[in-house]
Length: 81
Image 1 (cartoon, rainbow, N blue to C red):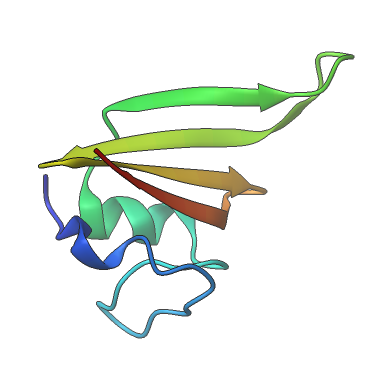
Image 2 (tube, rainbow, N blue to C red):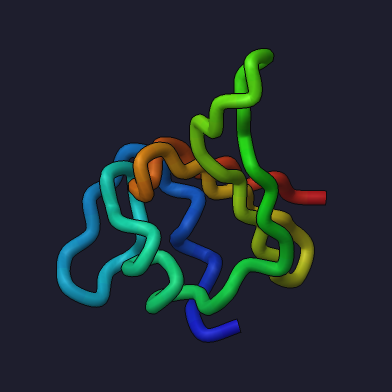
């Protein structure tokens, strides 16, 4: 993994140049920091319209799920085991 996942779970935090990814950051910036996600899933509504994506990153004892809408980070969820 290209980036350090320890800081990715801080919700709502804007990143500076090279800082941790946060809400509002672009998908490109997230990939630059953390590399390609281990898993990508499309999010759609009941009519089949695509609303965004969920990306999962696995690091040590936790899984980080990044939710994207309009190619920007909408939420970050850090689940530790």
